[in-house]
Image 1 (cartoon, rainbow over the protein chains, first blue to last red):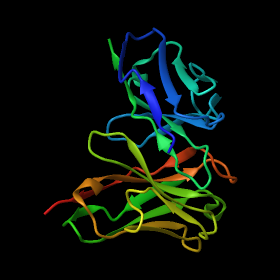
Image 2: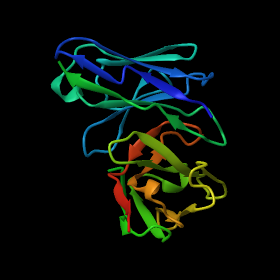
Image 3: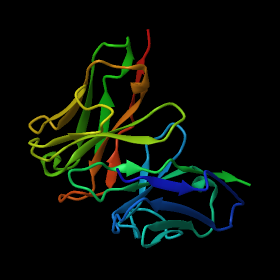
Image 4: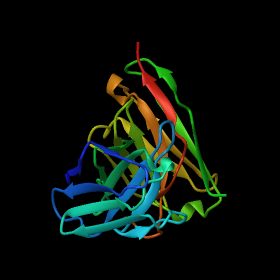
Length: 109
Length: 121
């Protein structure tokens, strides 16, 4: 099973600043990596797929990048609505054993 | 609009069964792979099961294999999850989710609001 490891577990950032979230895969997943945002009591929302493509309606301040098995979600200038939990997910396998990272909580500093 | 609505959650005793449903609307349901994902209270996301667009292939997480069955009815645009031999560790919010593309694998672009299953005596 591919293990996805996110860091840090909690990130404290001030509004207007940049946030950088990391996700590491235990083996290659190519660019088959997604990022989701989840707010309390809500379903996850797709932000990034294919490691760097923004989903429909996602603001340009969200960007994804990767190198090898290291993936990064960057939020360039944090808005109040961005404080949430972020999950990465690999979807490289078929038959699928899709796996999620444990999440990074982005909180207001 | 594109929407997934789950139902069927509730409180159930250990060892008993429960059936969840997910009603889809706003897209061509029979063109997409569909999934169930769960989230235990205060925990992260955990993939549970998937069914192909035509319902012919089904795959499960090891933790639920042999106890849960995923199915779909493309004539009714519904996705189901039959959960048998429930355990306390199955307590979670269960989400149905749609893959974004018509050729899997792909990310999950649409999620339902979730339905809570509590396994407790």
